[in-house]
Image 1: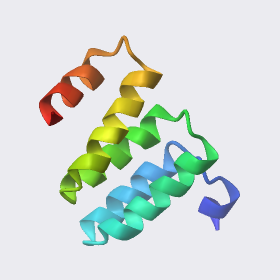
Image 2: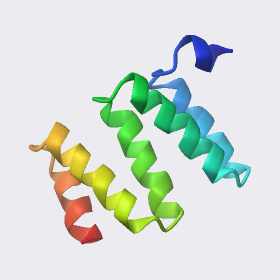
Image 3: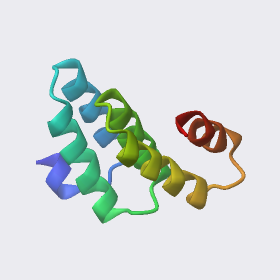
Length: 88
């Protein structure tokens, strides 16, 4: 219910995604975070979580695309640039 009420909750969604990952439900975690990003496309926190999930699933092209989105949103954050460089 709370996810439906606040689909872009940058605190609750990552926590719930983490719980889903811990229960070996990465597809559900990815779906949840993707819905949050659809509601808040400029959310760096949700995009970071999505990138982590994609990386854990071995979905390299999507992982790189998410890292590129992070660099575009925050080009002055070295961690995003370093992560992207490491993924290439």
